[in-house]
Amino acid sequence: MAEKINEKDFRRKLIRLVIPMALQQLMLALVSFSDAVMMGFLDQDSLSAVSLAGQVQFVFGLFVFSVTNGVSILAAQYWGIRDVKSVEKILGIGMKLLVLISLPFTLCALICPEFLMRCFASETVLIEKGSEYLRAVALSYFLLGLSQPYLCIMKNCGQAGKSSLISSVSVVLNIFLNWVLIFGIGFFPRLEIRGAAYATVISKAAELIWTMIIMQKKDSIKLRMKLIIHNDQTLKKDYWKYALPLMGNNLVWGIGFTMYSVIMGHLGSDAAAANSIANIVKNLAICLCQGISSAGAVLVGIELGQGLLEKAKTYGSKLCHISLICGTASGAAILCVIPFVRYFSTITPEAHSYLKVMLVVSSYYVIGKAMNMTVISGIFAAGGDSGFGFKCDSVTMWCITVPLGLVCAFLLKLPVPVVYAVINIDEIVKLPAVYSHYKKYHWVKNLTRTSNMLSA
Image 1 (spheres, one colour):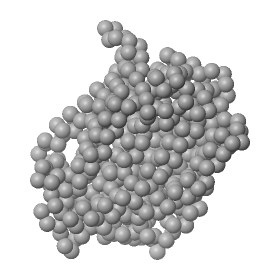
Image 2 (cartoon, helix red, strand yellow):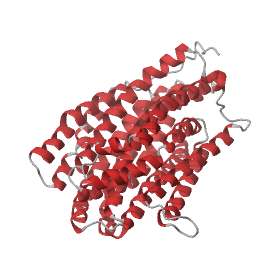
Image 3 (cartoon, one colour):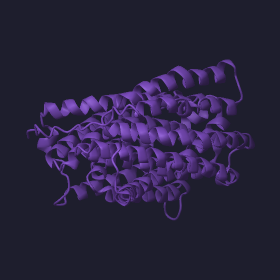
Image 4 (cartoon, one colour):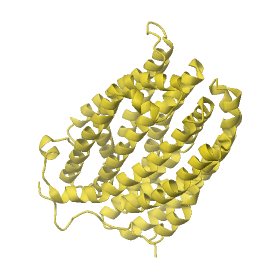
């Protein structure tokens, strides 16, 4: 039977984490929103090209999220018992991995952006404009790989507000630079697509510099060279045990999601533009849900690390109920904004007709997304039960929605809105399996090695 908890204490902990984490997600979503609005006022091809080029960063983000999620699983639990040295070793593991991962993405975007764009589009104008953006934005991948592990550690070690502040200021800077560099405001040159890319690079550089300054403060978690090159095989083994399934899950889901953009991108500029705006609206609508998921991972992880298994189970139950309410509210919010979306872009009448249907579809999609995200990425991940998501997404996306989407788009040649509806059923399809697995409580585990503290 689940343990009774202090409701006031739970709400206080949740709000303290959710607000900065949701704000961070909102600010990140606003970057995409500002890109879409500003590119849309240039022309529809620029909007579609930048959106499709952004899929490269999306794929890179999957690796970033996988590595930092692995860091988060162990860091939250070891922070629960205040084992700072192990937390710093975990930071070192994450930093090494992301440096190695970010370099190929940076080099490919610099050297062969046309090849990358041909994966997402068939129209020459989209390939040319997207390649211009990728070449200019390439350095941001490397900068992101350096800053994200430390921002992740901050969120798990009592500095979620500070982490959110750094990310939020970076986003505000990005949006401001978008405006002045895309349109050439004041003494700044009009760079259009390259302006959006340069804005991203400058803001990520500022974010990295700020995290390095924070790291130097007396009581901060340190990135120590001796802990970066440490040979703690036990901790490395634990990290890979929980991080690899997460990486597999994120790649299976993310590449599947990218396939949706590939499908829509090959259906023409109107479909690509409408899909781009629909995805931005979805991302804005679920920011609070993402905050609940991230906060849930920290809250549940800390309780599990302290051995309070029944309390963690109760927290999990409450988070599930909250995610359902939040997801339903997010879906309602999407329905409410449908009449107003057309004012934020200059897309064609055909693209706008697609968009209205896509937003209706998105309103039910976000309900399933909110629940699955909280349970799989939050609760399951906190207890190291990271393999289930990989299996679940492998089946729902690669055995159901991606094949169905390809058949509907290119064999049956169904209308664009129908194709979009088909590729957005994955979150609803997997809900029964997620709930069934949740009730087995495989995720209720203490992952720390308190009886055999890790050596230096």
